[in-house]
Length: 211
Image (tube, rainbow, N blue to C red):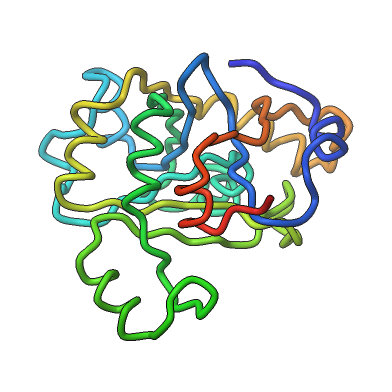
């Protein structure tokens, strides 16, 4: 995993707007999820999700932003989020997820009426949220970060067909979290992230990406 100093990252990335910011691996993107050891162990062993502890009937959320995942999981300290997985998926499939996404709350800039939005939301298998990004201490930032929730056939395809690598990065997370606890931000290392270019105006408009 390619890493960089947090102090370098914050000076390089946009500070405002809605951007998909994450780590790339060739033509793939890395997204993060947090699970309990049973689910995470199966995923790492089989390089896909499943097993007796995983439920395909629930919506499952992925996040390309590392610090958003750290905020959500408390740096792997919250119950049932003790294991942080870095999941590699081809950008081609990530774009398929985006293209099917419906924003989880009504926005008149994107939908003419609330009824149209509700109809689409009820029929979609992917929900999208733009939430404030966070710094290492969990403080909200002006820039928005994306997270995507999947269910149904979309979730099944993601979990069993599209993933090319599942890596447990919990040891890395715990090591870097100690630097946060000690407020040693100058030494903090994070996965190298960049603005992910979709090169697809239709998808960019659909999800409200900043220009």
